[in-house]
Length: 428
Image 1 (spheres, rainbow, N blue to C red):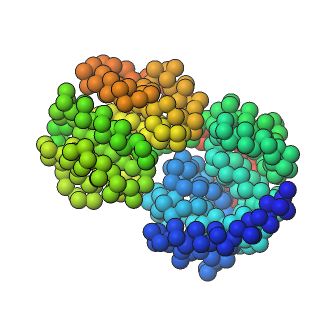
Image 2: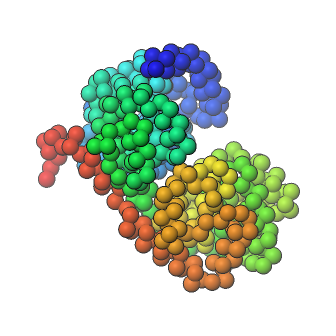
Image 3: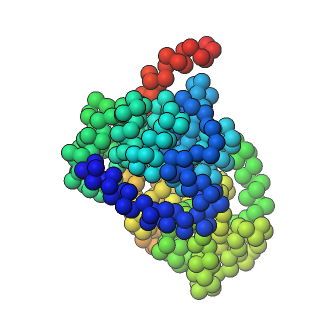
């Protein structure tokens, strides 16, 4: 199976490079750094690195606190790999030049071998749900301890992986540890071939995400400048098929609450022209973020057609909805608005964070809306009943306080593999 997988990857390589080229037409560094996915590097990098792989923007956000801890507490340079340019852009925004970055090499023996020899990682830390047979095998061959952290596995994915359990058991043989988000995720990893003694339950690192104090201090002033005298309803990370749901809900809400403003933050800013057309068809006045103007009384929709500003928008919200959940995408980070003291709603499709969503609902810290009518009803409830809104916020923040600490538990798992050199190099 392993050799079949490798042969298939080599056969598909021309298509992968072609796909990357077309992807790179809209990204600045993606094509110019194509050699990195083949394991070739044009300059010398640090060696004996702590290597963290975070596939894209969401994983980079989740990994931020872990990366900060590793960078400040161990005498090794941190290398971050991503699979997308938005992921790289977020690494640069969060960490600047304090770490190395390259794109993850394709999962081929030659590329991964060159990567490992070039960087000689002390440990490999893979975020969330990335299973690469060649990479795992090469880490084992070169005795690089490998961890899957903040690990999650949806029911659908686990059913697919179960068909390959014999193969995956060999792939996972070299894994030093798995830090799963929930007991359910831990059980699913065990089912697909990870030994039980290698699995711990750490919780979700997104509950440990820091909120910059400047956001808390300045958000009231910025909100008044950008959205003067408006009730701000932020819908984050929308996908195709969702924007029209919120536009229809907004039209009905506006007839009862004229001061309401809808802020749409599409998961992919390139969808902005499509969303503007939807606004025009619904006879709604839209103002784009890139116009750099404050809203006025006739603005209905503020469209965030930029990348990396969702957190700032949540900080300005009176209430929020985490999208990717009204269509079967699986949901996104439901804790970011909560950490900012903003009540959160989400839709019925939450497979990516199913247990946390269920637990948050049981704690009465969020509202799940199954349809457009549910969205309208929930927003109206929070406008008309400020005490209900405050109850949601307090319950949600109590849930976060009770369940955070995932980064600390993850460090406990990894630290023994770095401890000897840490004791030698770091002051008391």
